Image (cartoon, rainbow, N blue to C red):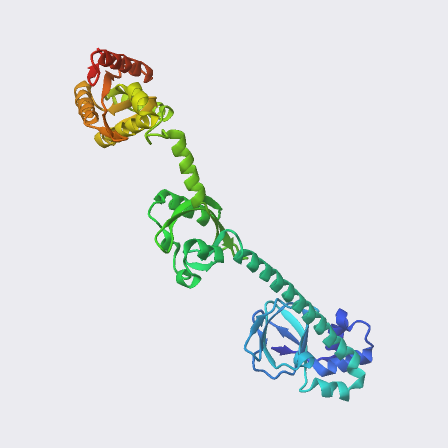
Length: 445
């Protein structure tokens, strides 16, 4: 640390600074006699914690970094002190013992005053009241501004913290490795996990195994590139139950641009998903039997026709109709008719393969597709189905009703792009079965 001993040089340096503007030459001389001008290299220490608290300085040029420690052990890292800042003997203001570190962040010039007792200095040197008090008042103004700024920041932080804590959405903050650092109350309410149970752990704790790996790959690729990711997860609660969440994850960068954290804002959409699935089911399912309705059956049939055309595999089409259905309704009532349809549907479902497509086309008519079956295989499957239906009985009002069905079978022909022609041929074969005595299978020629 280089100390200037030329009093004229000190006076000239002080006179160029706004803080000493207007002081008479004699007053400048008196102030100059109290201290030194110190020139510091970048990183050079001006004073350290534990040094006597009798140090006052004014930054003339450059910048000083300060860290203040109070008697309670709290450390306050203040911002850089620019030219014009005065710092020192804070105990004069609130009588609280303090200690501090101060060092230069660039080439810096400061005017320093070392005196064991500023109270005694002011009493012993009345002529110096004005410049010394001006120094102290300037420092008080700076300190007050810092306190006010800190108070404002703390207030804003409290508001933001309260907003996050009481957010209707789940909020989760992780480091760049995915280790959890914060979760809000909504997270606990939805997942059942307490903060202390998840902080320090990775988000893989919540994986259900039902979210595709490609979703996670897309997520990490996006956020590590600095982008914001949007998507959905199926995760697992603490009790093992599943829930769906709609999620937005954004990266957080340091002032230097480095990725430091990720913030996830999530919405529990489990109920929305359930309602969507229910609407989809209602739109595609026959309300009485629970099998595919006509619209869904025809849509699936179109897909199967395209697949069969590409793979050059056969596709068989079967139509069946409940025998004497009008008689059942007339003699036993519509409840009996409904029961007969549901019983037939249950029998068919338990007899058919998972790959077979089964739907109610309307009234007592049903359609079945046998993907990959040639005429022989489809005939065997249809005959098994007829026999299973013939063994089905329902009981209504003490009466036992036997159910039978007539069936018509057709194959999709080369070049056909629609199921309509095959269904028409199967329907004609079904009519033949009805005319031939019912409870039988007929094959379209």
